[in-house]
Length: 413
Image 1 (cartoon, rainbow, N blue to C red):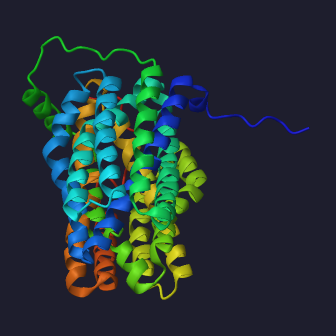
Image 2 (image 1 turned 90 degrees about the horizontal axis):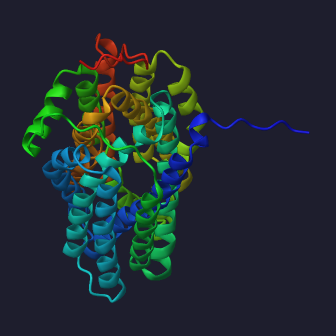
Image 3 (image 1 turned 90 degrees about the vertical axis):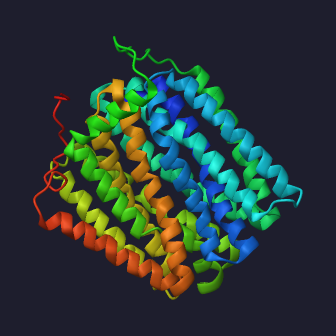
């Protein structure tokens, strides 16, 4: 007889498991839609630079609205805020599905839908991240994030893969219809969660004062603002998503199905790295050095992707990209969540997402414009070299990231 495999404690939590399932389903739809957005704009315009406007739309919404979303996440019921944001995104996805399926979608429609969906996500993401500590004990936060991140990667794996297949069958409209359904599912699941109420501050602050309080907190936490700068620098330089349609269609000549597979490969790499990532955040006392090594190797993998002469090698490079990114992302996210008290967590998460999500979006614009001048291969390789240089700079100098052990002080004063 085989002995029972012991589940991690965090997976014995009913509310966390429900939330986990809902997030994965919603992310499958969202990530499939992002891939479809890039492909549809490139298909409609034939321009890498115009395709980069998808990232520009995300960046604008993130920078303008993230602080407000974080402030609301610390002032109102986070489940209700999530449900409202998901409902807005549901309506946008449904409208884009209708426009596309009826043959009336234009490139600017897609870009506008990205603006609106990302605007909803700026209220969604801080609440989504900040809700985790309300579902699990503090000593399980790192485990919860270590499970949620690869689950997110599973969604990013299945989403683009499904997107490529649906585009092949009947265009991007089918993907947008599926996205609409997954938003509806998460809205229902959120209604079933049981979470304690937020502690209410004795003095009621205005929204602007709340936002400034979050900014001041980050300013007094060197680990958080240094991780933000590292995240922003690395993701801006090595933004590869905007280049995948051109690499798949023009360089590797594998069409929409190949594009879906290539878009999904980084997430497959992240899933393959799940065990190593989980053990690292659970046991390693040198997580800062691991983070910097993973960031540098992410750049190396991007160079390999840029110069891949055949589709099989490009897939291997994309797998490596995903594995190294999963390691770096999990360590960064866990450090920020552990180092932040619950009453301010939404605002800190919102500011952090300006780098973690805004970086790739801004990178789509920068790298997309650069690729319009020099081509996707040169653009990606030059950006990757810059990412390696940033990680090397942090590695050779004494700083809070390099010395980060994975253990953050309980003193939040």
